[in-house]
Every structure is written in C-alpha cells, then in structure tokens.
Image 1 (cartoon, rainbow, N blue to C red):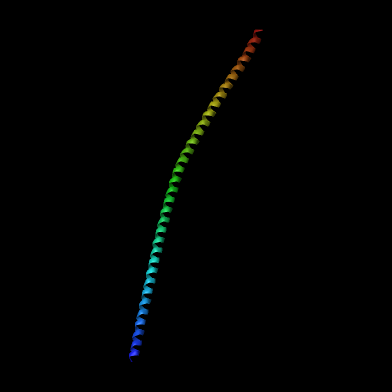
Image 2: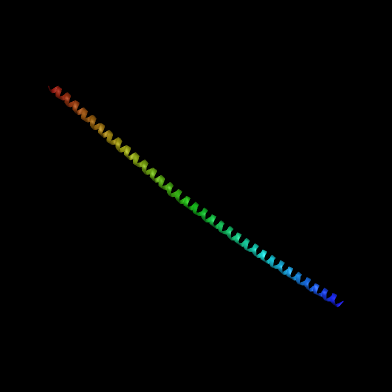
Length: 124
C-alpha cells in the first residue's frame, strides 16, 4: 500500500509540476504575444502619425509653393504683359507720328518743289 501511495504521490507531484510548467509556459507565451502586439501597435501608430505629419507638411509646402508661385508668376506675367502692351502702344504711336511727320514733310517738299516749278515756269 505504501508503495502505491508513494507512487500515487509521486504521480501527483509530477502532474502538479507539469501543470505548473504548462501554466508558466502559457503565461510567458501570452505575455510575449501581448508585448509583441503592443510593440507592433505602437510602431504602426507611430508610422501612421509620421506619415500623416509628412503628408500634411508636404501638402502645406505644396500649397504654399503653388500660392507663392502663382502669385509671383501671375504678378510677373501681368506686369510683363502690361509692360509689353505699353511698349507696343508707345512704339506704334511713335512710328505713326514719325511716319505722319515724314509724310507731311515729303508732301510739303513735293508741294514746294511743284510750286517752285510752277513759279519758275510762270517766270519764264
């Protein structure tokens, strides 16, 4: 009977030891899985935050650059167009005035020459 009791006692201790080992292994595995999941979640959250910040910064920079470039380009284009229009108008006016003066001068010279011719013919 004692040998059976000893055998049973030994079997009970071995079973309890095995249960303790299994429980410890399960707890360690669960803790490791939880830690890994928490680390992965933290990394994903940090990556998402960094991506969102980078996207926001890029969008803000692009918007600022576009606004500045559009304003500068529009202002420069408008100024250049106005200057070109003014220069063209001034050149056209100057050319018209000069041509008109030259035409008037040519007409005056022709009239004078013709008049002198008539005057000279009339004299003779």
